[in-house]
Image: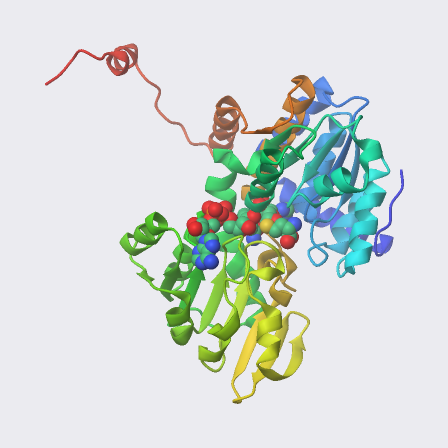
Amino acid sequence: MSNNVKDMSLAPEGIKKIEWVQKHMPVLEHIKKEFQETKPFEGVTIASCLHLEPKTINLGLTLQEGGAEVAMTGCNPLSTQDDATAAGASLGLNMYGWRGETNEEYYENLNKVLDHEPDIIIDDGADMIFLVHKERRDLMDKIIGACEETTTGIHRLKAMHADKALEFPVMAVNDSYMKYLFDNRYGTGQSTFDSIMGSTNVLIAGKTLVVCGYGWCGRGVAMRAAGLGANVIVTEIDPIRALEARMDGYRVMKIREAVKEADMIITVTGNIDVVSGDDFKYMKDGCIMANSGHFNVEINKQDLQKISKTTKLLKPDIEEFTTEDGRKLYLLADGRLVNLAGERGQGHPAEIMDMSFAMQSLSAKYLLENKLDVGVYKTLDETDIDVAKLKLNAMKIDIDSLTERQVAYLKNWDEGT
Ligand SMILES: NC(=O)c1ccc[n+]([C@@H]2O[C@H](COP(=O)([O-])OP(=O)(O)OC[C@H]3O[C@@H](n4cnc5c(N)ncnc54)[C@H](O)[C@@H]3O)[C@@H](O)[C@H]2O)c1
Ligand SMILES: O=c1[nH]cnc2c1ncn2[C@@H]1O[C@H](CO)[C@@H](O)[C@H]1O
Ligand SMILES: N[C@@H](CCS)C(=O)O
């Protein structure tokens, strides 16, 4: 075993946090027990590039119980929790990474994980998959495939496959119902505010809050903002989603109009330059901006800097920009996904990552047991249903099942009024 973490003396603290989240991850605990007995990953090395915090370490431990040699690094230089990595290392996982890595250190750690010569990769954002294709081609023959955690990672992998550049199969874990319906919506909805409120200590009620993007994450963020008493405005580029937002009760307008009213702006699009250029010129004094989508490009910080005469770090994750005309604008967590990179960002709740990581561990097993051709694959509906049943069971919720008469009725095509 090898590792490179910040401080091993933090391990006991990290272990307590892991034990706490385990109590709230019953599906993953169930799968862990099954893996203990069946050892599906005996002799297999699994590399992961995921946000490193207690729930992710619990995924690592689940794969380890299944017999895997596990090597883990972070998928964002700011989201690692150093007590969790120390705990992971003390529990036999090969851990690399610390909070606040430089870009160079980030890629060094990805390479150290790849030095373990993985059979399977679990990625978030596809950085590790790209690295293998570009610089670690020596590993290509051994890799069976990968699992991708997030929306933007999957968009990119599909684009790569369309260009015939992808060289191994990838399970699109994000696209399973048990992932995006819950993680992207309820997870991002809650964890975004958990982090913003923890870091800024400002009131949401009564604020005009602009949500950019009304996809799965945007729906969750808008829903929770409204629940906290905000006056929500949505911006979109997709006419159907814009209409949906309107009928869900929100105002919808162009970003240039929305910024004029915003007390707070949250981007969740996966796109670049969503808030950019002259948008900053129209913002009100005191506007707070955060990104909970992909990478630090949704809010264009360079454009913000161009119209600012001074910038000041008020807290590690609150940057103040004073514009030429004296307004103060605030950017949280350097524009990186605020729910994890924020000082108080703990990521999604344990009950949510329970389902996402259940899908990850079962997808890794599926990759191993099925020799797939190169491509980007949706997970099986049966896996979604199995995970949903396990979750309902853990929540002690019983649901009905079809009677024979109902089955026959639903199959019937010749019975009218
Ligand atoms: N913070 C987290 O923990 C977390 C969780 C899940 C996903 N994500 C990331 O969040 C992003 C959104 O994920 P999703 O699942 O909601 O994706 P999605 O595709 O369902 O939604 C994105 C929405 O943004 C809209 N959009 C694109 N460009 C826009 C623009 N310029 N202005 C306004 N709207 C625009 C699209 O039309 C779409 O409706 C992705 O990058 C994803 O990887 C983050
Ligand atoms: O607490 C967490 N631990 C690990 N991963 C997380 C957590 N919260 C959200 N995500 C994952 O981060 C991806 C975007 O990078 C999302 O798809 C989500 O699944
Ligand atoms: N690994 C990427 C994914 C964002 S959705 C990041 O943390 O920026």
